[in-house]
Length: 255
Image (cartoon, rainbow, N blue to C red; front, top):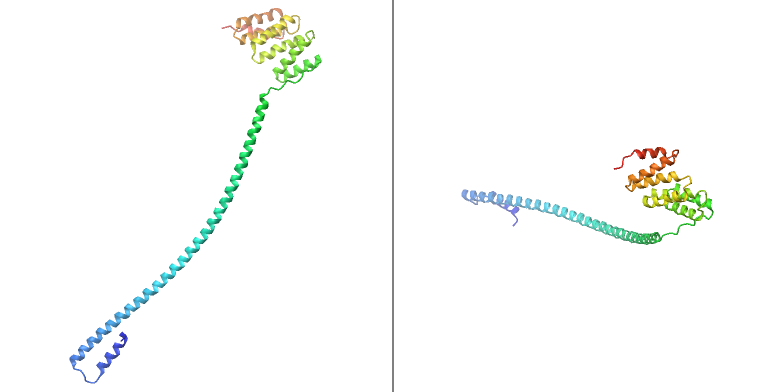
C-alpha cells in the first residue's frame, strides 16, 4: 500500500465508535504519528531525489552542449590546420623554386666571373702607335698628361728610336726619365736622364735632366751625389727656371 494511503485508514480507525480502549487509542495515535513522520521523510527524500535528477539532467545537458562545442572547435581547428598545412606546402614549394633559381643565377655568375678572370689574365696587345712623328710625340704627351706613364714611355721611346734627330727628341728622352722617376723607378730614371746629357747636351732639357737626376739620387739615399748635380745646374744654368728649387736643395744638409 502506498504511504499516502495510511493516513485515511488510521483516521478512520480512530473515528470508529468505541471499539477500542483508551490505551489502545493512545497507541494507535502514536503509530499514526510515526507513520506520518515516515511519510514526511519519504516525501522529502522523493523531492531531494527529484531535485538531484533535475540537476543531473541540467549538468548532462551542459556537458552535451560543451561536448558539441568542443567537437565543433576541434573540427574547425582541424580544418584550419589543414589549410595552414596546405599553405605551408605551397610556400615551401615556392621557396624551393626560388632557391633553385638563385643557385642557377649564382652558378651563372661564377661562370661569367671565371670568363672575365680568364680574359683579364691574358695580356692585351698595346694599341698601335702613330707612324707620323708629330702625331707620335703628341700621343706620348697626351698619355703623360693623363697619367698613363707606361704608355707615355712606350710612345717616347718609339719617337726617339724612329726620330733621333727631331727637334723634340731631347724632350722625348727627358720625358722618358721623368715618367720613370714618377713611377718610383729611380735607377732606371737616372740611366735615361743621363742619355739626355750624353745625346742632347746642347738641348733645352739639360738643366731639367740634371735636377731630376739629383732628385732620383736623393730618393736612392745618395744625398751627396745629388748635391753634385744640383750644383751643376747652379753653375751652368744660372737662369734656369729650376734655380729656386736648386738653391733650396743645396741648403739641405746631408745626413
